[in-house]
Image (cartoon, rainbow, N blue to C red; front, side, top):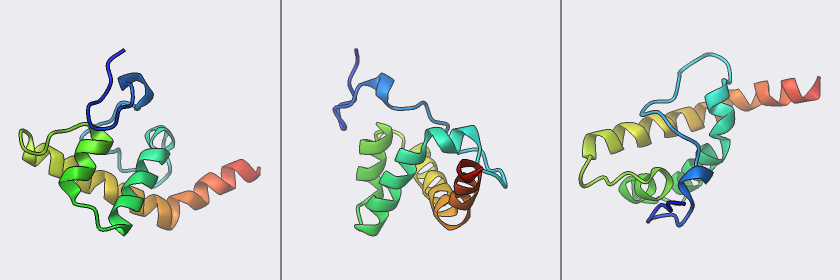
Length: 98
């Protein structure tokens, strides 16, 4: 099984990701699969981590060889993570409470 150099995690243990998460008004299946990713992004942002290191560790993308893509991936997923922490989580709690 292939392991990511930066994370040491197997490729199968990291959910597949898009360059930009689907932007919907409701939590979607992509969001649910990527909750751990979103939490890691929020933690890294709170710690002031450099976005290049974050994208390399979390997504396995080399920001030196793919700078534009790396920036898009980081910014779009962090924005979605922030939306989830501000609004989306309420939807998750509501569906689990039913």
